[in-house]
Amino acid sequence: MDIVVLISGNGSNLQALIDQQPDHHYRIVAVISNKPDAYGLQRAQQANIPTKVIDHQQFTDRNAFDQALQNNIDNFQPELVVLAGFMRILTDNFVRHYTGRMINIHPSLLPKYRGLHTHQRVIDAGDTEHGTTVHFVTEELDGGPIIIQAVISVTKEDTATTLAQKVQQQEHIIYPKAVAWFSERKLKMEHNKCLLDGELL
Ligand code: GRF
Image (cartoon, rainbow, N blue to C red; front, side, top):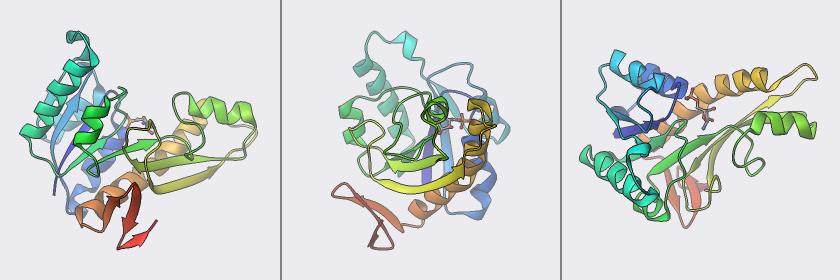
């Protein structure tokens, strides 16, 4: 199954998807970044995957950017759009266009800690557990149906940096797994719920 990955930065999740691609039924046909200097673009080029930069700063408004992004994605005709550290809020029209075929990874145990700075917020709250969530993207920011989560424990020594490292290690396991399920047609979203092998998640 052809997939397009959207990034804004380092692209370590993209790297995990690239590395695990030979074991699965998905094929990354393009990597698109809204930032020209995203390191993930180099990772894609190393793997001979076509890249495209659509710099949001070149657009006067969010709708124009999202329309350009949509056109570029649809040129590749992917069956799944994978947000991997893509740091732009998407318009409702864009999100609706990809209903049931766009997923995201968020560094918290959703529904806790939507939005930014999740690791620091976990420390500030004194939580003993933290983690990461893969979910379908809906119009509600970080609010779509949950596909898979990984939990890590938080110790007194942890900082936002060590938590980010621990969380990312888990992300590199669960994100390729979720993409693999979708590409095997085991996973789908129906009526705002996730189904895996026909069972509600
Ligand atoms: C990940 O931690 C992900 O949860 C969040 O952004 C980060 C992206 O990291 N959405 P990378 O660019 O994949 O290394």
